[in-house]
Amino acid sequence: MIILEKPLDDVNEGEIARFARKAQKLAGVTGEVAVLITDSRRVRALNRRFRKKDKATDVLSFPRETGGDIAISAQIAARNGLRYGHPTSDELKILVLHGLLHLAGYDHEADQGQMAAREADLRKRLKLPASLIDRARTQAQIRSRS
Image (cartoon, rainbow, N blue to C red; front, side, top):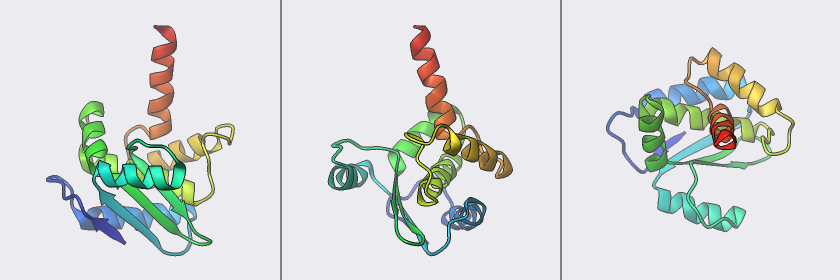
């Protein structure tokens, strides 16, 4: 289920829902998954409440025994789409995939690269631009060279 609280001009809710169902199967996530696309203020409030981090972020995942919920900042998705040269709809798909992998039990902060490898594989299979983890790694490499 997609809940588009923050409408975006170039985003088709049905397209995102179809993508989410396909990606959910490929990621091996069973059960119901709800994806909330909202504003950064709401994502910040969720991040503060559940992770004790008082800042907006692009995507949050809330796993349940099966399935779970994903919250995405529409503003950050739109900004990242512009920054990386692809449509906002592609950025939303990247964030949905990333969130689904967290629901599947992956944790890129602690898993020695398993999530990054799985995300890269699924990104290619789903014909998506560079993943969040790939981009973060590239940015870190650029900063370390400076």
